[in-house]
Length: 244
Image 1 (tube, rainbow, N blue to C red):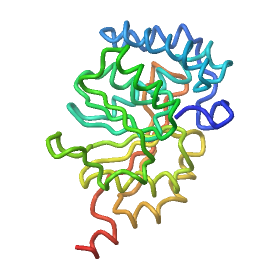
Image 2 (tube, rainbow, N blue to C red):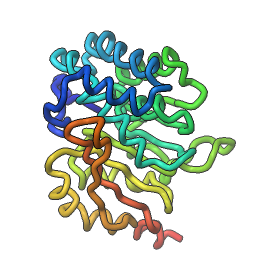
Image 3 (spheres, rainbow, N blue to C red):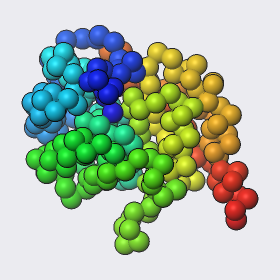
């Protein structure tokens, strides 16, 4: 998710870096096979995304640096062939850029609001991603825990992502239970990532998470690099262990 309810950009969006054209060029050099898809997605954000209030009008001239490249580079933290659940996907960030640059990933975009869900459905079809990207209309707390799709589907998601959804302590309570043991949560954060990680440690531990690690990715592509809090799911939550 990239915007607040009034259409303004979240405080977790990174500050100014290189020019938007420079960010595009750097990202395409990193992922040359994804150039056409990334261009098409950016145009969707600039057109229907702005028209429907998913992206603030002022963001239209800086979509690559602040949104598309900032999201796509998170894919460098994800293992080959992983299943990714992007919670609070909003305009498809970070889920759709990651799917575009990593054709080995299968992605589930989770979004509760109808207008955003509709945009995501249309974007998935327009970008030719319907064979490996699914859109689910739900809140994180409404999903099975850990998140499992229909019985005939692949194994549970190995990675849950979230961008600009909520402060980390609240976000962890909503999303870490969706992560199967052995998977991890990747929370895209801003300048306060270290402080948020310290404050959320008690909640993380109670939900079976390991010590949070703050990492930066996309060096040489985005300036500043994207800040991500990585939290591995090491064990079931305390109440899950009691229930068993």
